[in-house]
Length: 212
Length: 125
Image: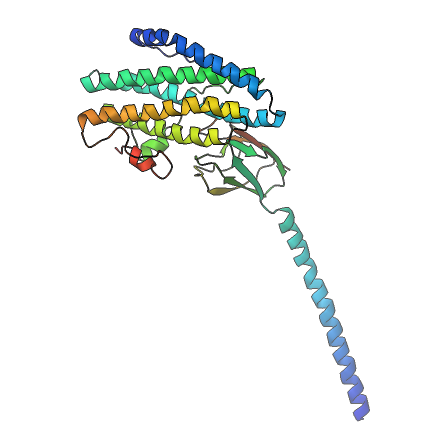
């Protein structure tokens, strides 16, 4: 189930330093489980499907950042984006592990990761590409923005209040990823703001995306 | 003479009305069958809600179609699994719907491209 992704030493150190935080999140997952047990079987089945869809998003993000990191150049900009991409990827790996443990604790089977994911819709829409450092970062931004929208939709449909609470700890992290990518663009172009709108919704999506 | 003619006209009229009634009855029969067929082959609705196909398993007749209504805010797809024969939906945006026609008999499994954990099955008889 775990992805075989090469994470550089500095990212591994970051991951180790974040070990305590990860333990805290794992504890959150268990708290969630205890409360979730109070729900009906039907509610648990319903929520488990949503957790698996969230796991799909994490698997896709981990894969996408892995592909992106392999395509980024060794230029200054390329290295800045690569460093951010790998930090974001580490977060997604943690999210993935939380979802896997929560689904298993609820008696479910976590969905398998795919060998590859289809991002052609984003490329066709001009919301990123894999042909330059800037376009790779734009593609990552579009994925993060859509992850936020998907999470918001998913969390709002969970039936167990404890799972809603747990989901709400991950949602801001996803939007922070989007803001962090935009902040990198902001260092190159002062007209690009890290947080371009007061909301991140279907209606404001276009303000967050950076077109190719 | 006049009486004979009147009787003949009345008989002809009755005969005509009778034939017309029979003709109407005969022509109505196929329409009813056709309506019945249409009713049984009426599209079935599957709702995509909370990242789930609901119901996730349905049984339909060959040639019947299924309308997938996406009530989630995010886009989904109805994509056939390997060796399954129906035309993929492409992207169904939040709030939109798409009709898929099932022409091949058998078990037709499908999933969402963006959320591979979302599965559904259509059994075509």
